Image (cartoon, rainbow, N blue to C red; front, top):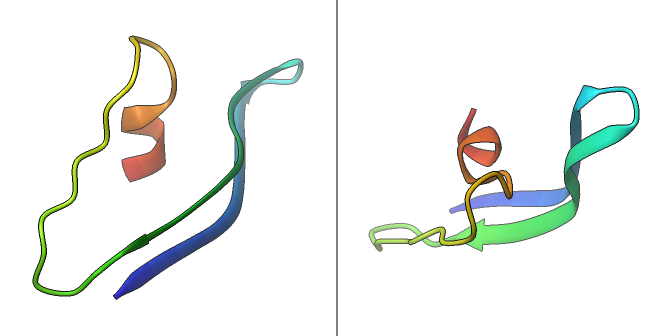
Length: 46
């Protein structure tokens, strides 16, 4: 299991890509991350 808690990330000082993101990915399962273009999906996986 992988758990992320209160993840915050900014590329620029005044523009947050992720703000207080928390999620859990269960072992031996598939997870899908969906959202609008530019909402931080790829950033979350970096």
